[in-house]
Image (tube, rainbow, N blue to C red):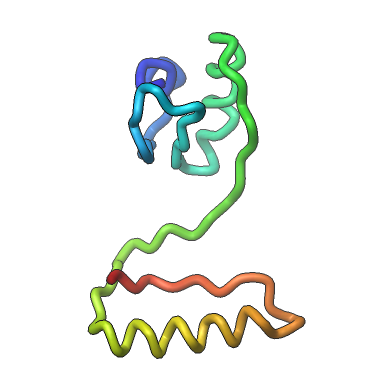
Length: 93
């Protein structure tokens, strides 16, 4: 997978998992590089399951366990609201 990404001139990517026996690889890349990556995967007969835009924090913040739990309770409550689709955060724990 690394070789395919490099050949596709994908500027930046990050693999998650990395288990060679895994059924799939999860690749994070810039949205501008997605078409390059899918074309390269197709050329190598590698199945592309799908792509989604996601928020990846640039400045993760480590918080105390109690503060993390309080914030997660708030995030859960916000996610339960009818008008809310997704709540993102940059907390580490």
